[in-house]
Amino acid sequence: MTMFNNTNIKKLSQHETPFYYYDLGVLRQTLEACTNASNQYGFHVHYAMKANFNPRVLDMIRSYGIGADCVSGNEVKAAIEHGFAKEKVVFAGVGKSDKEINLALDADIFCFNVESVQELHIINDLAKAKNKTANVAIRINPNVDAHTHHFITTGLDENKFGINIWQLNDVADALRACPNIQFIGIHFHIGSQITDMEVYKSLCTRINEMQDWFEDHGFQVKILNTGGGLGVDYYNPDTNTFSDFESYFKVFKQFLNVKPGQEVHFELGRALVAQCASLISRVLYVKNGQKKNFLILYAGMTELIRPMLYQAYHVIENLSREEAGSKSQESGQEKSQISNLKSQILNYDVVGPICESTDCFRKDVELSESFRGDLIAIRTAGAYAEVMSSNYNLRDKAQNVYSE
Image 1 (cartoon, rainbow, N blue to C red):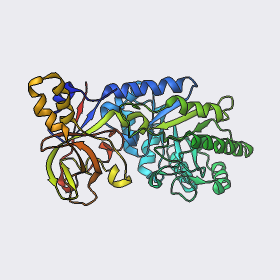
Image 2 (image 1 turned 45 degrees about the vertical axis):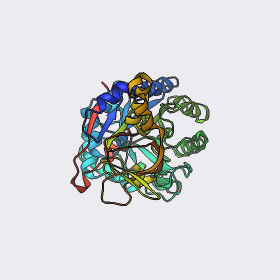
Image 3 (image 1 turned 180 degrees about the horizontal axis):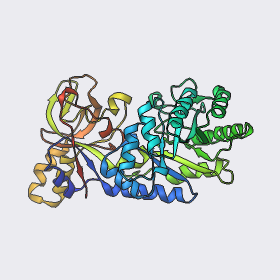
Image 4 (image 1 turned 60 degrees about the vertical axis):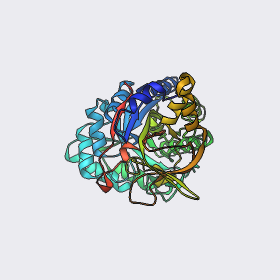
C-alpha cells in the first residue's frame, strides 16, 4: 500500500509546511495486525508512549485494548487521561522522581518496573506513607546483544538501565525487607529497532533462567515482561508497512517457558506507530555546486532528529515530481513539459535550515530534479519524530495533518 496518491498530495499541498502527516488508516491496520497476532497466544501488549504521544494516536491505540508503558510521570498522567485502564499501565525508567512515583501510586497503576535496589526502597517508603502496596517487576539486564545501533542498545552489562545479574541477591534481600512492595514479575528490554528474531530467542533463554532463579529463592513470578524493541522497515515503507508481528510473537510462544497462571507482557512502541506518519516540507532553496547539490528544506532537526542523533535512514520522496509523473500519463497537453521535469535524476544532500552542520537528513539522495516549492516527504516518521521535536532557533512547532 502507498501512503500518497494524487488526491492526497493535492490536499497536502494546501497546508503550510513543515507538518507531520498521519495516515490513520495505516495506524488502524497496524494495530489490527498486532492485536490479532498477540491475541492468538493470550499475550498482553502495552504501548511505549515515548514513541509518540499524539492525542489522536493515543486514543486509537487505547481503543484496541492495549495498555500503556510509561517512562515519566507525565506519561502516566497522559495515559490515564486518555482512558488507558490503570490496571494496564506500567511505569519504567531509570530515574523516577519522588513526585512521579507518588503520582503513579495515587493512580493505582498496575506495576512499577524497578531498575535499582535503591529504587525499591524509595518506592516502599513512599507507598508506606500512603498506606499502599506497590506492585513491582524487576528489570534485569540479561546481557543479550540486540545487534542494533549502540545508542539504542539497553540490555548489556554495566548499562544505566536495569539491574545486573550479579546484583540479584541484593534485590532478593531488598524485596524481603520492603513490606509495602509486592513482587509480581521480571522485566527485560534489550534495545530498539531489532529485526533479527534470533535475538529474541536468546532473550527467551535468559528469561527462563531468571524466572527459575527467583522461584528457587522463594518468589512467585506472575508476570514475564519481555519489553519491546521490534523494528520496522525504514527502507520499504510501502511494501513492508507492518512489522512481522506473527513471527515476533511466535518466537516467545515457542521458546519462552510460560508456567500455569503466568502472563506474558510486551512493550511495543516504534512497531505500532512508525509507519503511520511522514514529515512533509517544502523545498526552500536548491544549491547546485560542482560536487554537491543541496535541497534546503524548511523542516530540520527540530522536527526529526533521528538522522542527526542515530545516523538513521529515512526514505525521502519528492511528492511534487511523483504527482507530475502521474499527471503526465493522464494529460497529453502537459506530458512533454512534465516529462522534461522528471527526466533528470540528480543526487542531493537533503538538509534543513538549522544553524548546525549536523542538520542533514540524508546525503546523496537520488531524486528527480527538484525545485523551490516542491513538496518533500520524509517517510516512517511516526516514532521519535514529533515527540523529540524542539523549538531550537525559536522555530515554530510543526503542525499535524490527518488523513481522516
